[in-house]
Image 1 (tube, rainbow, N blue to C red):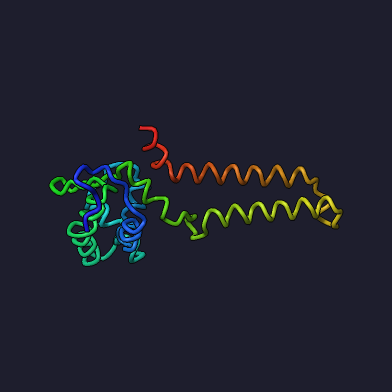
Image 2 (image 1 turned 180 degrees about the vertical axis):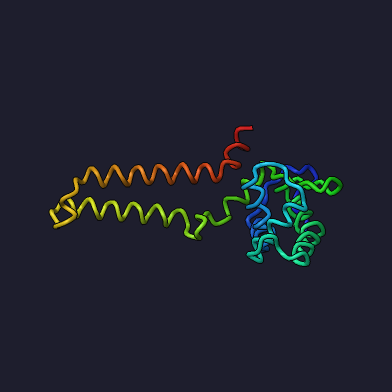
Length: 178
């Protein structure tokens, strides 16, 4: 399947994006490149993905070799054809392209613990509102704390979480600036 027109200017369709993201190694490739935010060597990428797959560091050599071969022969050329990465087959280097943002929208945005950020923020907002209401209605124990303290604490927690999320996805914002 060819993803780009001859001019290379066509946007990916949703079907093409889902086809790309259907494979775990391609998703892991995009995530690793996002985290690095720079050009990565194929050997380093294969080792990182193998470590994630096995949970071992360093991963077993046979797994690392298997990941290396599948990335080199299949996954990276497919991502390169789609315009998501720049894969230099001779130098064995990979770098995200700006167009990776098209694909990123379809990847689940989760915390490192597997909880979607939307669920995390919804839970923070609900707990803070619940505690503020309990404090304002005079519920024993909770009423001893000023509602402004609850509001301020949760606002600080949400602001800190937002800064962390922005920092962890800095590659996306930096590529938009350049």
